[in-house]
Amino acid sequence: MQHLLFPKKTPPYRNNRSHAEFLKPLSAHFSCKDSWINLIKQAAEKQFLVKNISLEYISKALERPHRRATKKIPLLGS
Image (cartoon, rainbow, N blue to C red; front, side, top):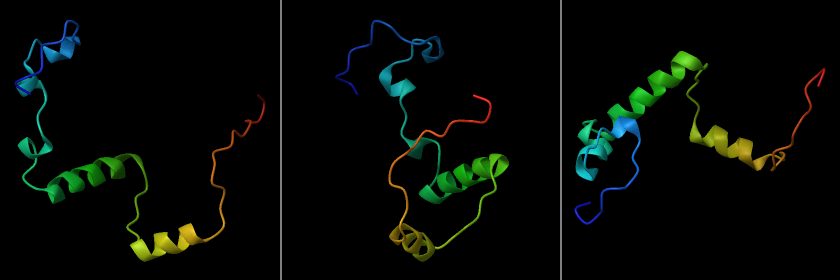
């Protein structure tokens, strides 16, 4: 990051910080990968019903026939 020039335009939340001050690796905020994953899970659980399922279950689901593209579905009354 020492070779990057300071950008001409920056967002206000950057507060004129250098690249080294503005961009930090996740390891600067979390002691290990597991603590980061747990924080993401906790945030998701506040918004969604989260269930732990096995990789085997997911693999079987992906083997079944399913739609492989997104399709726009019109809403009622639109």
